[in-house]
Length: 197
Image (tube, rainbow, N blue to C red; front, side, top):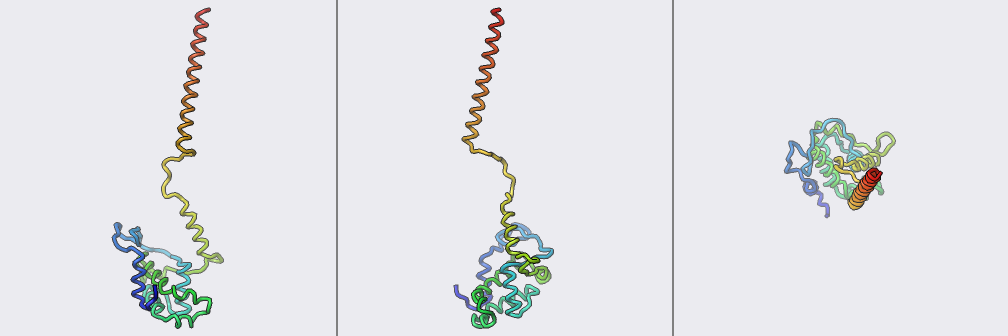
């Protein structure tokens, strides 16, 4: 896909990634997933941080509200590659082609997905690190571990497969039957010996 410099067109294409309609709950984020009203503080990290940092430092634009983010997104999308590349060091130029798409993704996810508005958007801080720790690595690891926890408790736990269970049950029944036969045989034999005496 080739960029056209049209922020609205890019936003429309990125919007197609999400499914914001057909919510069976009172409020959904996207893809029919329930989303409660946002409250409290949030942290934007990784691509969120780098994109907002680019807007603030390179584009010299504020990102204090959703309106600011949309205006900055449109400014990035309408800028030529040459204009943007003249503002950054050589090492950053490889990322320039993705800022329009990423900024639109962040705008749509925060506004339509998580339902932030101009009053709740300032509750998001965009950070690279928490203290001396990279947020992306620590949070990614925590999310990975969280995904290993089963959503529901398994209904039945078996240590072996079915054929092993069947074999063990069969052997147990055979041993019990042999034991009963031997017991009754010994009891009968003992009873016969007592009758002959």
